[in-house]
Length: 583
Image (tube, rainbow, N blue to C red; front, side, top):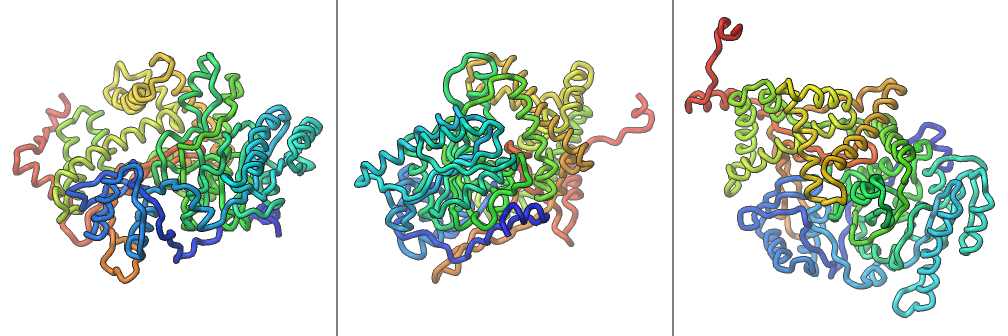
């Protein structure tokens, strides 16, 4: 049964589970991830993917200190003890690989890759996409002493274009093999057809509107030194040029651009997905599953999530850049944003709970609501509750109270940003009401601040060639178009789960995450889950999420402790009489 047959039968293609014994080779080069910060003389790591706080044993602390001293060059990992520790750090997003020559050729012999290009009705774009790919492959064969040639093929899949001749001419002129669908089946089905044509151990997916560089995808091969890596994505940026407002906006806010920082990609992390516009994957992981051909939009999000759920690593490497042609007509641009949002209900059905427009803690929601009601003193109560719960969680960690306060503050900011994002996107009609009512309503001003403050900071960081007023206007239209797609698709599917927030009750838990070891049973990394640190993507956009905290079963109520503490220090708000309330 083919992948398409399984989808038509209602089956979700399964990705094979990652074997538990996969290790990294001796001499593997790794460095600390950019998102990681150390605390208390490197006894605690903060960051990772998803965000967490982990207390380290001395053996791992020594590796962290060496990585900090080495900087971007990283360290070479030798011996079973170091390899086991760095294996766990790679899996948790605390460390990332460093390119060191052609280690992949020596370790895994992965020099062969197939190129799969799905195309629909755009022969000129296909010709432009094929030119650098074929030139790089012929150049590699001519200079095989420095760059091993690939024995893989280049497969163009025409997904039922009404005008087939321009596609056929472009493929034939470049020397690529052409496969044609008799009818349009969608990009997922087209990529699956291309996968079935080849046999190379790696598969490079490239969309027909993309232009790759001369070193692509060889500049990504070092990631596959790690046998746990199933896929790697480069950074996808628009082609330079263009002076219209939309083109200048796309240069800094393209939906395909995942940002300038390397990440481990998985649900719940800072980066929740990568687009398949340019993606290098391991054949053995996806050949039996592939893309879900029933998804016309969001098929790449679905694949990345299924691969991550099976235990494999998906990496994003922004040091490698692929260019793509942006949509420059406003109607085309808006239509595409709406299409992205329309994938939400189908993805929600396949991955329940991952498409919530906002995921926030009850303490943050209560704090923001009390501020909006004009009760700033009362708003300190849920903040204190969250702090006490987190401080108890970090009991025994050096400078734990300071770390708890810092984390609580960052969590509140992250939750406010999550609410603002939802008000700009899935809840944009409510956001529009809040903007209109801001001059008259304190609650509306709080909502407006959650919506606009992150955009002002974003403008200051990106420094786009657009003035702040027009940039904010474009961002609001961008988010509202995506939210319109979610709303329309949810209405058509009669499913409202993509519109409902997920509010987490406070909880206290200290799960222990043991690292794989070799004669090293004490190497473990207890993980502390913290509220408000989030990173997710509703459809093809980034999202952030992490569970909150709750009183430990059987222990005194954290809320009661917070209330008593406020009373002892004279901070408890006075009870108001009925007459006072009426006034």
